[in-house]
Length: 412
Ligand code: UDP
Image 1 (tube, rainbow, N blue to C red):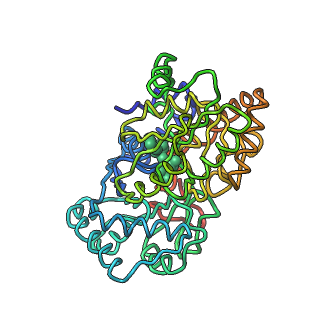
Image 2 (image 1 turned 60 degrees about the vertical axis):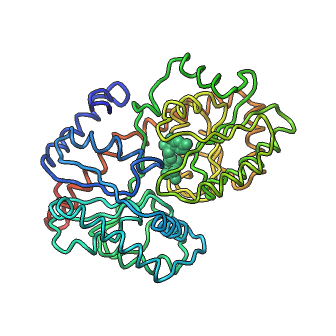
Image 3 (image 1 turned 90 degrees about the vertical axis):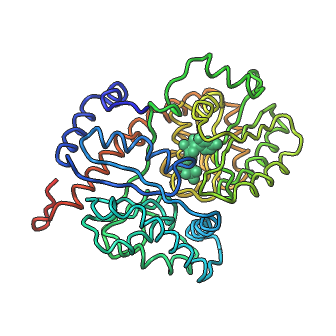
């Protein structure tokens, strides 16, 4: 059950909520549909879960649809995803045909709602082909890219680009990700919901219960990385960094992840992690069920330092979640993490396991920095990465997209 808009006032102030209501009034009755490829697992699902009810509360007719596909479809879309993030993948003509066929089957199921919508947000590449199938659309279609496609593997982008260019606009998380496209592009970083089960304040008994459940030692520092087991999250690099620190400090490591239903690669990467972890009792590799929001929340609160050592990242929600809990974050110096972590102020940006180990050791020797960075991190999130800012930007771009321009002036 999601929170109502007024319950965010205590966190962001009443002026922010008032502004959202004013924007909502201008869009009252607008039919918007979000489409992605999983209802569970990963940051996109996390966002759509809170965004849909709040947009409804603001007076829009908002819905969230999910495309369904075979295991083969998700293997192909994972390759497309990896290729867009620059990994040299090979996708055959037959694979692209499967991709299109699955989109076509989903289109038949979603046809009425897609044809009638005033605005359709298509999230990421998996459902992107739906646009080409919707010949009788009434509304505007916007492609929302959540990943870093600044340096894609060329053949994959060559195939997807004409599909994306059919959209009326696209949204990227930061300027570096935007491609040269023949339509308006908006920059909207993602955000977290401070009142969700993942981020709400917890009683200390709730936090301690999770510590006990996983046998974590309260007297020793804890490093935590929460992530799908994905090569770009570099969990094996995290184990390497931990081992370097372990030589000089008695740290513990939690690597917690679960699988997203649209991510078939997790098992392979998990096996690599388990092999790297060996039988070290201070490395806790946790395979969490999808609804473990409170457990993730508690683990982030138990952490001394949060890690997100990604080698590619559109925008790591886990980074912002950790910062909201007042923790310094050591993150990969890539993609959206550069926007999220203010280097040397709210944490550190690193490029290698050695770099991560160096920064962990530094923080463990300067405990006052941990507290100071954590406090700064929480305020930085309050200012920049909470859902209220995110909704305001979505509502504004909807107004811009739906309203005709008058000369150079867009009436918002
Ligand atoms: N997450 C979770 N359980 C897990 C792993 C991840 O609940 O075992 C959540 C995590 O807290 C975050 C989201 O899934 O809210 C992952 O989003 P992020 O942007 O960090 O990465 P993505 O998976 O979208 O690449």
